[in-house]
Length: 260
Image: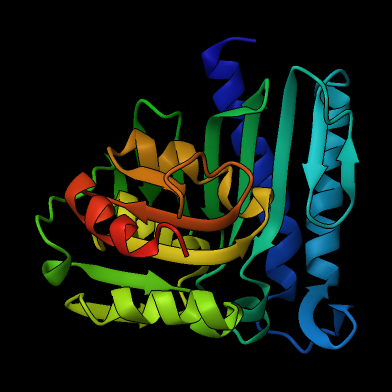
């Protein structure tokens, strides 16, 4: 498959998911919780969008593997594996907020080689291959580039919610939060794309699954940013993750996070 064909296929996946999801957005849709005793919402939109993308992958690349949030793994040990999160930010989605998106990654031997975040309501796409990152949307198309930020005291920090963290991690996050210039909540996948676009400097989260972060890694690194675990290891497995646009801010925040 050529690079042009590959780009076209990823856009086809994004279009299929977007066309499936949008009729549900800002409607009175039913919501289920995947976890008893905790609110982990899933909707018909999540399931239908993942089914649409899986069908396209099976048709075009039957030898490829698939890992998705809603329907698990198929051939996860294949050389090429697609990683899908049909709606990252389902809580935002069910509240009518637009900070959700469809995440699509392609991995080779477990390493992400391409990632896309599609926000169909705002008609925006953020993509990257680790070497470069691009934005396409109503404002046109442009390269993505992180911004410089020399000190934690100048940084803008975003997390989805500190309430998602356990008590110990939450206390550690709060210590970092007290050092930054500005802290905001509710970003979901959109926060990582704003980091790649040079709008914010730092994202810190916990309890992530691989499909929450794998598609975003090539976008962040392609824009010149850095994303690791709190222990400064690879972030592909999810868990506790820190992303930064400037290595100086990453190092300063990491020094407070490591060892906790």
